[in-house]
Length: 590
Image 1 (cartoon, one colour):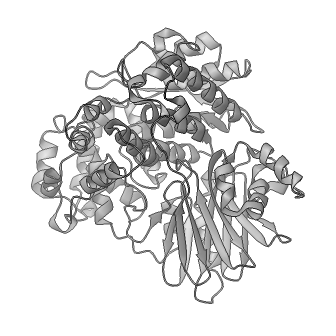
Image 2 (cartoon, one colour):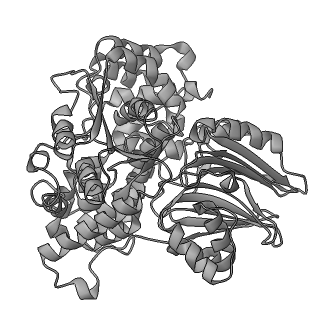
Image 3 (cartoon, rainbow, N blue to C red):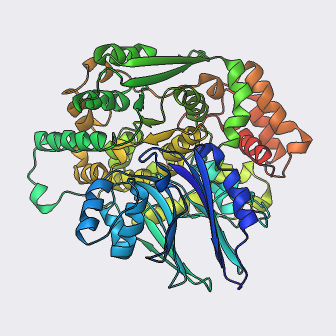
């Protein structure tokens, strides 16, 4: 797990190594163990390393193989690299290191873009082909690892984070109206390739991009998530599906133990993270299994921790458990730092939870497993039944999921930012795509391949990597994702959702954490704005130096006059959404 950066020139000038160095320096937190640079003619690479798979210097980056004419930077983890290495050795390749980076490099030489479907892992990598004078960039299936880039007529430049990319210079920092509408509609999700900053894109998940020295770009989606059972699965019973879910999760959890360092678990006390702990115990992880939970002050009559449930799991499996309780004062103190760590502004209350939890976890280990993705894959949210039975599934999804209608958005924003119902059009286009027939499957596909990528997954990546901590997400093993998509909705929707997963979990973990109200990492103080937090938000929105001409003053006054009554359909604070934009822009110097 690392931070990567690079530049490819199209104007016959040498790459701007100084710009790449500035970008790479800003990625230090993602890779605190080592750094490296490589520059040759039109291309330059930068890398910050977090040593996980192979601790030796031979796996340092940028990795150069002069005999093959390839150089590469890579961020991520390839879990099946030993098997791929053996296959490559059978083809005659010889290796000078022991990790997964060189397997990628030689695998690309052997198979080209056909390497990608062979990979089980999370990754973004860029390979420069010296002899063909072209760069190949690819991102993993479910976008677990990020890549931001900016292309002009003179150069392509990329980085693991948007704030780092800004350090290269020559990007104006103007807001993108399309992305702003998405942000205000999808609780901060901006679907790829857009970002909040005009002129900066993010490579979509499951996409590769080939760029030659003249700036010509070829881009292709190399994987998609298709819904519905295979022909030989149509007669499967519920028990058949349940058995396959358990087998696939056992494999996904076990393969993510491959590391040269200890691996812990972020334990919220919910079904998903608790199941990971149980499966790790099954996989033979002994008394040294580390688990970590976080809690906050109560607010608005809402409890700020779920220690009751995480303690049950910690005791049941005998883990080395760590609790972290955060006071409101520390939330306010640390929020600016958390926003500096965000590639794009995120409004989820989980962000500060993951940021502070990662700070604590990084003192004990360098790798954790986390339960993101289960709700999107196995239908754990309340809107799926609403979409399933709707005459107009798109309208039902938008009503349940979207933070505000387009009409409300028009009232909220100043005129220059109101250029179309981009969020509504996006959902309509996505539901119209082939590959999912049932309405609920269309919603699950949208959430699994878009909303998940740019909210929970991005949140965990940004907040853990801010402390040099690698987070692995077994539910997003592509085999688990593909299996979940083939399971009929009738086995997911009952009993409040995730039915097949919950019944699978009964074979592994105590029933008390399954038969309980649905929870999450709660930070009530950011949902029920009050006290010092409310005053801080008010200052963010009313400070003349923070006024960027975004919001209609009348609507802003209405929100501030009733901060507790202005919640989104998903019970998020509309006021906090607005403040978060200002805070992120300020922390990025924009």
